[in-house]
Structure formats: structure tokens, C-alpha cells
Length: 136
Image (cartoon, rainbow, N blue to C red; front, side, top):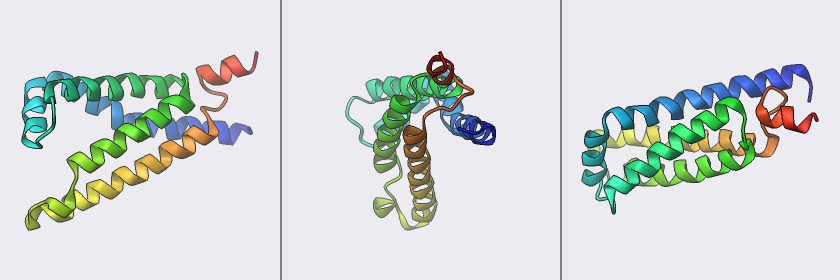
């Protein structure tokens, strides 16, 4: 992989991390409120769901940040994001005044899933723990 490809890969990973890591950390600091929100969505075992979301977003975000097990983490985050998108942004069931925003968020997440799938196929590149281990 050429230097510019590795640099773009790193930049892409950082931008994806900018979505997941702050979201996970905000769930930690607003744990009770997040459980309440998940409950309002009708989620089964909302407290457990929040814990799973925190682990996925924080641990997954940190793994992408440093490029550790990137292909696996990207696939796991894509599956997590798909589930969260279907549950949290069901624009087809939203009230008319909220449907447009939910549809935007739904398709934004679909694009994030696309980016994660590209990352899963390309790997982390040279500027990562994975890249360092592969160069040995």
C-alpha cells in the first residue's frame, strides 16, 4: 500500500472513531438517561443493551483508533450499527414530524456501515498495530 493510501486509511479510521468513541462515552456519562431512552424504544433488556452499546462503541472505537484487529472490529461495528439503525432510526414508524430526521440518520448510518465494510476489506494500513505486526 502506498504512503498516501496508508495516510487516507488512517484519516478514515480517525473520522469513523469520531462517531463511535464520543457516542460510547456519552452513554457512560448519561447511563440512566440512555437506559430510559432505550426503554422508550421498547428494547428488550435496555440496561444490558446500553452496556453492549458502550462496549461496542468505546472498545471498537479505541481498536479502530490504534488499528488493532481492524478487519474483525469493522465487521462487528457494521453489524452493531445495522442493528442500532433499525432499532433506533425506524423512520417508517416515526411520527410525520420526526420521520425526515430519522430517515437522514438511518441513511447516514447506512453510509457508515459502507465505510466500515471498506475498512474491513482493506485493513488498517501501515499506520496501525495491525500494520506494524504485518511488517515483521
